Image 1 (spheres, each protein chain N blue to C red):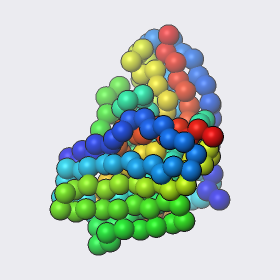
Image 2 (image 1 turned 30 degrees about the vertical axis):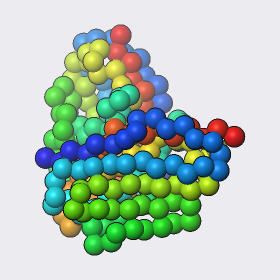
Image 3 (image 1 turned 90 degrees about the horizontal axis):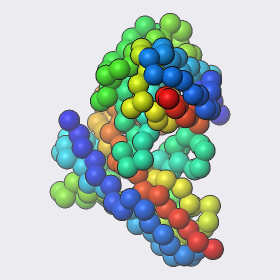
Length: 114
Length: 114
């Protein structure tokens, strides 16, 4: 089955800095890679995703890049703000099957200091 | 907005008890999921259901069962609770269409088994 590795496990940055979280996956058939953000006391929420036919996707201050050859994808957050502090999970799956499930990484706790 | 409601935020039970965790969603989603979240281990899938009365084992089903008698409700059952089942449990629902549809999570039930 799929295995997703996520690094780092914790990341501390100053407000205004950039943050990068990296994930690798094992199953070359995986073609859909979402990122979820979990704020304290809440359930995870989808923030951005990327499909395997795209190398990069941006949404305001967040972007995701995908390197299919290396089986590697990353989340980039620019101009970090204290409200970006949360746990971030990457995931991988097959997007075409109605019965597919997500395999999540172990999560990264991002702390943004004012 | 999709709302996924987990019946309890905190629950304390004793070893050997039969424990029921309840989850209700209000968007008529066909797919529902139960995860457990542990520090350093991320989100691990216990069971999922693609429709009423349907269930599929996830990655860590041992010691758990599920029930889905109505579309909006998905219950996780610990047949005989053990201390190693102390964890945060997250329920999620998803519209039809496979993994391209986002999973909507509840805010979790923190279960302690004494």
